[in-house]
Image (cartoon, rainbow over all chains, first blue to last red; front, side):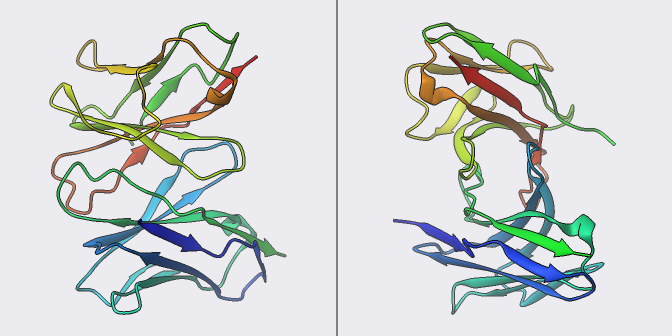
Length: 113
Length: 115
């Protein structure tokens, strides 16, 4: 069955450092991989998307990599700030169908001032 | 900036009662979704809706659940006879047909508490 694994433990990082979050998936052949941010009691907010033929994507302080051989995506936040503290969700997306989003369990990031 | 809205923000109901959760998707969007998140767990897909019909549903979405788009703006999720285990946050989402990356726009959620 399809499985999406993210760091189940919370990630604590010092302000200003780079946070790296991992998403591994099995029994998927996604054409895209999306990353969302979720704050407590709020809906997920779309951050970035990377396509299967892209190795890396950047948006401001965010960087995503996508390795279809390893079946892994890495999500980096450089120069992290306390406002980056949230849960980050990855979602591999297959083409076709109606593209429901199947989320991983998420990684809770805490940036310590 | 357009956003998905949901009402109510919090709904408390007794077991066995019917509830209707309401959503107003972004106006030019064509695909609509409901998700739920039980406290401390991951966000789970319930149902997708396109062209006035259900396009996909999960195992969770059993006969107790139904969705409707009663007019051009609202999208509703009905739970006919609520159970304690239906207590969760329910999120509505939408996306435009032309969204090449299929990113979805989520509402703020409705917290459903079944007592």
